[in-house]
Image 1: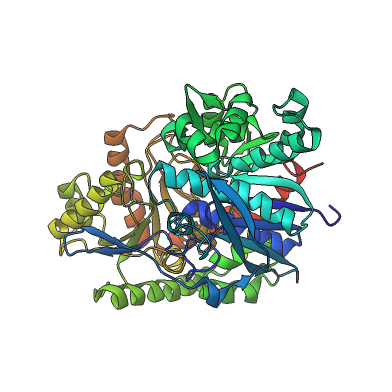
Image 2: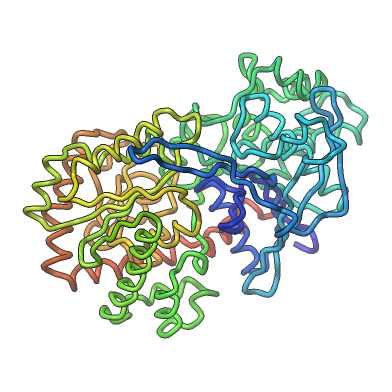
Length: 559
């Protein structure tokens, strides 16, 4: 690749748990991708926004009401200032943009820089100073200005830094103004005001697009009159000339698809769903993977170092986990479980029993994730305890401040927890972040995943669990269609039909718990340990970012 890099643009990137520059899976995936690039010496850089007030801090009342407050932090204390500024005209005002630099240091000795754009400058109008404050905050006007700063401002920054970029990777539709910036550059060079098919093809040859959203409602859309007011009449006309505006609306995913030469979904099933949404564009599947060294818990790190030296540089060595002594796998799991339960006690004062089977569920709290599916039938749950064995549940997840359905789900879980106590302890942990995710994914005995099909693009939490020997009980959607081997790596909820049947899935969930999983855990513990060990050997190597990134290199990034 010579000295040219792949510039990876993402609205959110999870770099450190104490830097609230991410909200969930999309940002964690972005961070894991760049961490893998640093490990493997792949010439890449990241571009995002600084999000001075983060996503939000979550607080839960005694009955499950969610309250939010800004996640204030100080970029100046953790990041290196970039001594260059660029400008962008938005809504008729000049907006000054600076950047902060964070270095991801890899096992290869190489590092990947990440540039976080910031408009909080005294020369900016007060409204413009706040553009890079809130991740996924505000209304359409705020979001449109943010995405303009990310795409248009990000390309301008790289130009000002004289950074040679071979390819631009757009992570989700929020970044779709990157190819618009490239098109404007080309038109300036040629002296044309509107693009020719050759201009569009030249831009496409430099852009790769990854979509993570399998439902039309999840894609950012802006009315063209708003686009004209914020970006200006010329840019609005240029967007229309690319064919990216439909019915007086700019759809950011459609823009990214139109102006990228490569488009991929993030699992095989998600590719089918996305292809149906964009039938005229070839969609490829590159299934997500997680950064193995980041998500392996300390007890399992020690185990792997002892038996599989070099696993942290070459996660494919984890396929040899089949030869790990079961007793030592169990001992590492007991330590990880102890760390999780200590964290539960520290946060809530609740003391959970380490001998009791523990189910984990942690997702963004929103309707299609169905965190309430487990609690469909409270009386059945009580009978499961009597017939199958005791269990306890630990949940976590934030609802977007405007997601009333998601907030209602948290409230419902709290109500159900009260109804089930003390037969089934249910604990909901607030402020779900990278640090808590690491403890949860390693410390529970079973990972539960219940999205409504086919709305799970991929899902990576179960992959993190597999790294730590935690099997999944999951609906057959997203990555689990590829990682599931019944009774070997975990268990399926429901059948392979493309659409969900909530009643049938709840029934199957209960049956598996009562008749298969709990009896195995309590009466055939070695058999359960074998499933734990299998989940490492079969899924940890395959669902690693060290497998995912070479797929991008061989296909999307290939010259």
